Length: 144
Image (cartoon, rainbow, N blue to C red):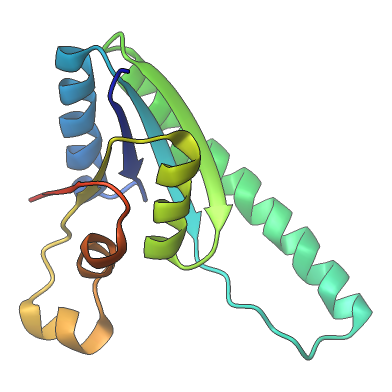
């Protein structure tokens, strides 16, 4: 079995550092990388059928924009390393959805970049990295 690294990716500098780390590890170990982008989406239960239809249309447009603007350039850059790169884009709670992606992909590790927020900010607003390491089904690496 070869190692498969799932990288939580949002296009930020921290995410690019995490992708570089994962790609380097995958190259050294003969593994592959899945670049995962999660769009947060809160469900609303009190929408009319017309509103639901409009929301679904916006969701598809948002996913297409993320694929074009975030995932495609990241994949193209990462493929230069010679490592097999896949992408996946989903809606949901970021940490929970990355865990689901890791399980579905048979990942051996999750890699995420740290954005540098203060510990106070993380306590007040929460932290994807902090949540992820608590619920992840596989080891996590947080790249500074």
